[in-house]
Image: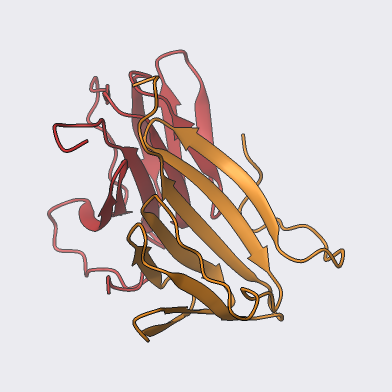
Length: 111
Length: 111
């Protein structure tokens, strides 16, 4: 059984903590704990797979290259279609921001 | 934007409320609000896709046909591989049990 989503690692100065939670046929799920961590200036995520996120604790802000900015409080969700360039521009430090992220997995030879 | 996961419908006597949240290539995500609802006696879920669930409010208990019983409190998660027969045997009523469920989607002609 994976750890409870609200049992989070102590800060250790290394930035975000990413914990893989599950990997099924079609998807991969991880928990991300951020404490003020953001995407480095000038960088964007540009992913081959669809992604969906929810904030479970704290607060996070995501922007995309269309100029849209989404503030996510606890329980707020966001769908990020493949190749929508996006970045995290703010995360809360107290309390830490807990994200749950679902990534689509493109079918490989196993399908 | 989908509604906040903690904004739930009023009880209306019709049983569980299932709200589709997102559908990406490889996965489908829904929120399920249960108030004491359980899988009918003698029935099992037997699904072609992998599933992953987390309880976000309240409490739920799932059992499988291997005799394993998992109690899920807030933040607890469970992976249900395809064709593991399972059923929900208990959900809290106060507060209502809020589940987040991720279903794998088998590739169709669009892949």
